[in-house]
Image (cartoon, rainbow over all chains, first blue to last red; front, top):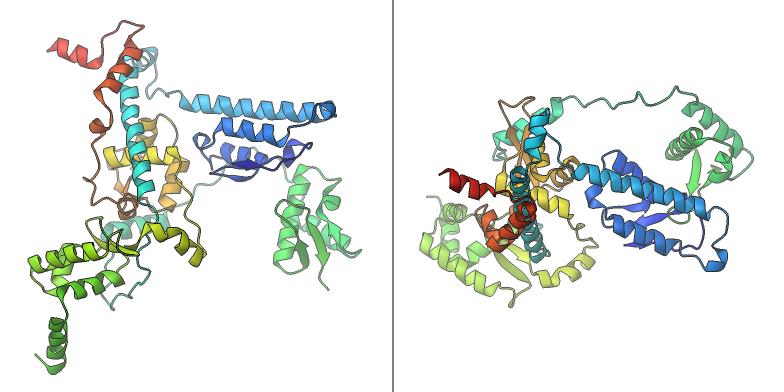
Length: 247
Length: 212
């Protein structure tokens, strides 16, 4: 684990490197909220240690404005993560009613559940040890092509593959999104107009924009760069972005 | 028998069984079972077994950069793990990132209780494991093997794959200790004491014993 060390800054600048995630802290929060990353994969203790090492400030500069706000925001988000983890750990009753709840949380039930989980946990530890002992064995890379008409595919794999092809993807929930107030086309026009005056920093481009417009501006920039209509340069990961017109 | 077939048979006879099996294993990236070796080489079983024993000695961890592994129900040549760092440098490849504790728990659930649906895994672990399952499917350590017919929505059943058996270096599914063997009686007694110590309730076993 590591965190970029800096004496000051905002929570937006806080980047982390964990086994399961590397990037901005706020990106980690977004992934957890979108269920893309399981909260159990993230050690909250590690996160707090990273934060402390990243923003360790000398006592003289401890009163610099913004520090308290940043720390408060971090504590707020870390507390939410803790709450989320705690809630996820609480067993969910499968059937409703007080009687069911009583049975579910009875000592006998708790013993059964804990014993079953303990076995799984020990099984997982044994597996981890076994996997670690068996890493580093690389098999031959030489793959002969199967003879024509000799390729055998198990029927169950075909069934699963077909099911994946014909199954309909679930439509994502979009009710929480507000009305569209800005379009990609508008931002493309704006960027192209700004580039007529020469190279432009992305920060300057979005300095007067709200979060939504900034996000759409970023999408528009990437779109223009992929089409070769502008040159996008970034000297280092998470460093400043510069937009240059194509000559 | 035409001339070319006779010539091939003659050439093969000139080679030892060890050499033939060595060549077959070299070109196979997946483990080759004994029955496949027998049917391909047309050699008698004792001869094939003797050849495999000889190859095991020649390709041991101490003797060679290549080792003969008995995994996933077959035999496979693989590089010696002591050479892994050099090979990764040579191929400019990173070792896959290690699995998380949650991932090992999901694998243990399916290995010991499987095949299971995603909901079964969530119940066994007491938490939502969908993201972990997705990652394990991507890594080909788990696969959908069928449908739980008779259950609402006929959810997919998940089971471990040959890649899982290979990664664990196991011969087959039975080559793992039982769940009961992993938890000692002292640990179980400690757990029961913690649960029932304060309430004075009898444990599940005590109750079932009493009922009898």
